[in-house]
Length: 439
Ligand SMILES: Nc1nc2c(ncn2[C@@H]2O[C@H](COP(=O)(O)OP(=O)(O)OP(=O)(O)O)[C@@H](O)[C@H]2O)c(=O)[nH]1
Ligand SMILES: [Mg+2]
Image (cartoon, rainbow, N blue to C red; front, side, top):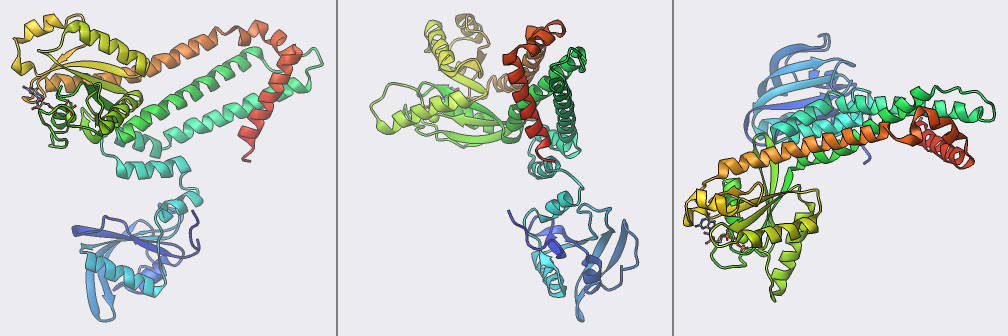
């Protein structure tokens, strides 16, 4: 994206458009104080940074509004430039008039993201922090908020910087070793090399896994609701969302396409996907819907597999669950759900009937029975997924520690074989172009 002239002084409404108690307008650039002075009842040209001023915005003799003004002098502002932030009354008319006045006096309307771009250009933040600001504004759950705050405060950036420094160090050690490979001298300490490789590997694994976790937090943990027609999938979706989102009917095959919506449970954002009931059918549209149901199941982190508590048999459910597992692989957590407990025997009888199916939840999506425990199971499944990721990372780390190819004793022999030397040169070139290429 190309921004217009960077020397322009820019202005924009920083609060949401529409009626509100207050509206905030931001002006940034070398002429911001001078331009603002042209519409304000007093001069702030001699005032220091971080000062607050009260006065009136005027268009000639016409009073537009009484405002509070914060002044930030470069470089101590969000953009790193002279910045004026004024709070006026939150009327779209007043805001438009003030912006119009500012443009008449020499400001340009800012393009989307231009204040953040200037902050980046002036070294106030890196790209990951700029992205975090957008995420912070869009955050709709406790977890997404925490993630964005951490990223904005530079936690992610410091990890990347540390990785970059480690890679540069590694590349220089390898180069040194290659330069003197013909001589019988070990320049790079074997233990140091091994530790470095392990720590790089750990950070990269962690970053790769944090992408999936972060993505789920930002966009919601995908949960697919699966089952045969009429099991109550759409009823469950509505109960989880506490909204009448999907059509519910006693006609089998009501839902033909996938229906998605999000909600937050226990501070975690979930994206629930109701699907077409799975059955053999000659109906062309329903067949497409069923294919989509499988597709969603494959992409989901959690699958809620629904069956009718009274009418289903444990053996048949177990067989279906086994098939489902084969189809979706190890990754998604599958939670079996016995629905419609309200219309059948007492709960202990049902519990006994499905005792062989691990983790079964008993609910009545229609009456709301068991929903609290299901919601708790969802939040726990999410937490377990996170700790599984951590333990996988730990496993990868311990496997790497015991990896014979990089154990200290065998490193020299490994490195000196002609094929390995070739490999090491390739690694060196790779690290060099990857890490140093941007310099
Ligand atoms: N008694 C009882 N009936 C339920 C319950 N949940 C759903 N039903 C009823 O079961 C019927 C089917 O519900 P839906 O939610 O449309 O089922 P579905 O699985 O989405 O069905 P398809 O979209 O056709 O695949 C409706 O008549 C619901 O009222 C429940 O917990 N108890
Ligand atoms: Mg349905």
